[in-house]
Every structure is written in structure tokens, then in C-alpha cells.
Length: 345
Ligand code: OGA
Ligand code: MN
Image (spheres, rainbow, N blue to C red):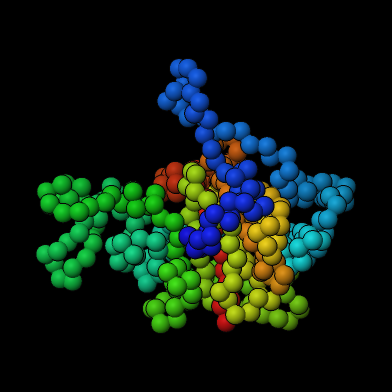
């Protein structure tokens, strides 16, 4: 999606690509006997994956830190970790409490994909309102050529079946939602911010949260101005290929990246795809900051874990119990959402 893999033949051979392959979801379908139908995920060796939650626990217990890991104590947030070999990279495990995680999950599904914010569905259907509600209510998007203006609209399943026109269910659209953009709109075809596109400001609460979280990556008194955000939605098997975030003007400013839902593996590489990346777990509530040198480092998400044992979303399951929340719970049980907030100029 970042158009960074056009040189595919070469990238197959890089250290970054090899790490992606190591952690990516593959299935064992040498289907020996009766289990032919049920595909089993191939087991992955996770022993080299850095786990900042357990690093935090050990550190709080006895002050210990693994080699190469540095801790900063900040009076506003939980401890902030950084890495000797990656100046400008910061990891704040569990920075978002469970209530904040839930409200961001709701917003990411209901509000953030609303026009004028763009999503991956714009290219095919134009602006689409209320995808999450439509999915919940069993609505169907139909191509309506009779009305003016022409376009795609949600209708009931019954009405859709009577029309002889192209259609797609709301639930399929929700399942295939891959990104939405807040604030200044990013144009994926040009890999650039398109300032002429209509847009709303990033919501105030998210803006304030990002400003607060950005502090450990900035010198005292320097402000972070959130101007654009990309929201990524991951389902089983979805990945984010190795890329650089290099479309913003000022690389001293951090990208503030929030993780929600299922656990993932994040790869932090170097300035070349030949540098072997470091793998680390990202859990719901974790926050990553990438500033300065780290802005020039390849990174990506080769894997999310949607199985009960590894998703590690028990705290969300106990929180999202209200009847109105069950639709969010159902979605997030097999999904991950990443919100990354940027100062563009
Ligand atoms: C991005 C990105 C990381 C993540 O969207 O540019 O790097 O954790 N996301 O999903
Ligand atoms: Mn990125």
C-alpha cells in the first residue's frame, strides 16, 4: 500500500524482506490426513521478539534492563523506553488506559471513516457514509444510476435484491476497510498530502492526546502540531510492508503511533533494507514515537495475532460488554487498528 515494494525482485533478497517472511502468517497445509479442511497457522519462533511489557515489569520490579534498552521517566506518562542503536525511537508500553482504547476503537470505526475523510473505498465507490452502521444493520451498498447525483448508496437487503445493479454488503466493506485519513488527506496514488482535498481538523481530543504523547521525543518547549493521521485497519493475514514515512517536511517531529486491538509484530529496521530489523510486540494501548534518525528507518507490520491465546485483548473483552458495544468487540477480536498522527509541515 505504500508503493515501496515496486522493486520486488530486489526486496526478496533484503534482510528486511527475510524478517517479514520469518514472521508472516503462513499455513501448514501439507494436510496429512483428516485435518484437510482446517488450515493450521505455521508456528513461528518468537524468541527474538522484544517484549516491552515484560521489560517494563522487570524494570519496575528490580530496575533491570536488557542490553541496549534505555528508560526515561516522565512525570506525565508511564516509563518510556528507547534503544541505544535507534536514536529517535520511543516505546511507551500500555500508555493508553482501557477506557481510552475503547473510545478510540469506537471512533476509528464509526467516525474516522466518515467523509470528507477518505478511505480505501473512495477509489471504487466515492465517499461512503456510515459503513460501520450499515454493516451492523445488514445494509447493502448499491450503484444507483436512477437518482441524481448518481452514486453508491446503502439500502436494505430486500431492496438490493430487487434491483438489477452492482452491490456490495456493508459487512464486506467493513471487512475490507484498510485505511482512513484524518486531517490533511494523504493521496496514496501520488504518495503525497493533497492540501486541496476537503478535510476536517483532527478531532481535538486525539490532537491533545498526540501532543501529550509526543513530549518524550521533543526538546522542552517544542510543540508538536498534529495535522494529518492515517488509520490502518488490519484483519487476519493483513500486513504492512516495509516502508519509510518520508512525506512530511520536518523529520525532527515524531510520528505518534497508537496500537489498538490484537497484538502485532512490528519490525524496526535501519536506513537500508539490508539492515536486519529488530522485531517487537505491539499490544493494544502501546504507543510508539518515531522522530529524528528513526524517521529514516524502514519499518512495517508483518503479522497480527487474532487467536484468543495470542491476541491479548482480554481487558477489552471485559470492558466492551454493554449491548451497544458488542459490535465493536466482535470486530476488534479479530482485528488491529493503528492510528498514526503526523505534523506535515
Ligand atoms: C504507518 C505505520 C505502523 C503500525 O501507517 O505508516 O508504520 O503499527 N504503521 O501499524
Ligand atoms: Mn510508517
